[in-house]
Image 1 (cartoon, rainbow, N blue to C red):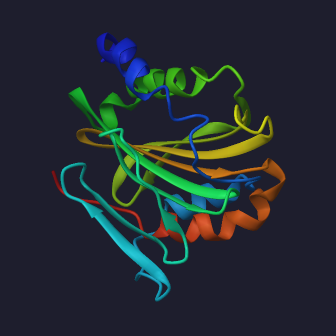
Image 2: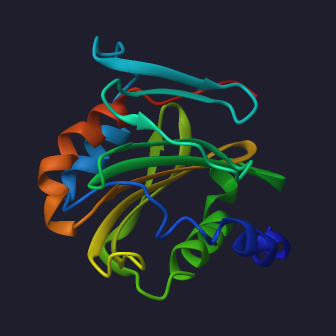
Length: 195
C-alpha cells in the first residue's frame, strides 16, 4: 500500500482547492450522517450512479452539474460559488478492507496534507458510509482564486480496490452552518455498490 502513496498523491492531491463543499460542521454531524442507512431520495434531488467506481448518491436538482476533464472526477455539482460537491475515484493496487484501514489512513493523511494551506478543524474519524469503510476529514483551506478561507468536509471511502472521495466545499468557511444540512442530506443518499 505504501508503494502507491507517491503515485496517488500526484494523481489525487488536487482535491483541496477544487470546487467542492462544507462550512463549519459540529463534530457530531459527520458521524450521524455517516452512520445512517441510505434514505429514500428526496423529491427535489437528482440521482447519480457510477457502476465503474461503485457508488450512487443524489444531489439537489437546483445545483448545476459542471463539466470536468479529469477522468477520475465522476461528478462536480455546485450551487453558485458557495456550495459544491466533487466525487472522484482512484483504483488502488490492493483492496482495502477493515484490516487495511490503518495503512490506508497514511495515504489519506498525505492526500489532505498535500495542500499546505489546510488547517484541521476536527481530528479525522474512521467511519462507515453507505456500507463502505473509510475516513472523514474536516478542515479549512485557502482558496487560491478568491484568497478566501473555505472549508472542506472530505470523505475517503473504500470499495475493494476503489478509493472514492467525496469533497463538500463551503466558501467562505463562515457559510458552512448554512450549507451543512444540505451536505448531510446528500451524504445520507450515498450508497456503495458491490464490486
